[in-house]
Image (cartoon, helix red, strand yellow):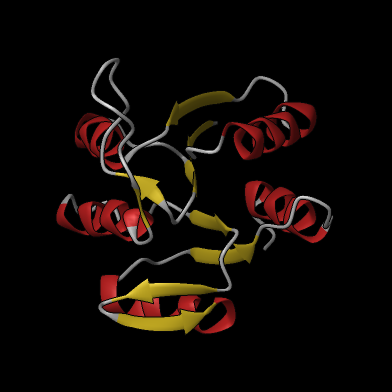
Length: 150
C-alpha cells in the first residue's frame, strides 16, 4: 500500500508517520509539505490513500527566499487538483488542527466539511478529523481509515 502524507508541521508529521509505520508494516510512504510539490506528484502517481493537512504553504521554502505562508485552504487546492486529474476514487482523510474549514469562500465546521467537500469536488471517500495531539481519537480514526473500516 502506498500512502501519501501531505503535512507541513514537522511534529504533526512525525506523529502521523509513527502511527502509520507502527501499525502498517511494509507500507510505502511518500511525503510533501506544500501544494506545488503535491500537485506535481499527483500528475504522475496515484497513491492508495492520502492523509492531508488543510493548511499548507503553496510551495516549499528555499534558502534565502524566506518562508512561504500557509494557506488555510491549501488542502482544498490539492483536492481541486485531484478533481481535474480525475482521481476522485483515492480515499482521503483530512487531519486538521482548525475547528473550521474554508470551502468556496464559506466556513464549515469539521462535521459539516466532509459532506461539503464531497458535494463541491466529487470526492468519493473522504473523512475529516480534528487533530489534537493529546487526543487518541484522531489516531483511532486514522487507523480505521487506513484499514478501510472508517
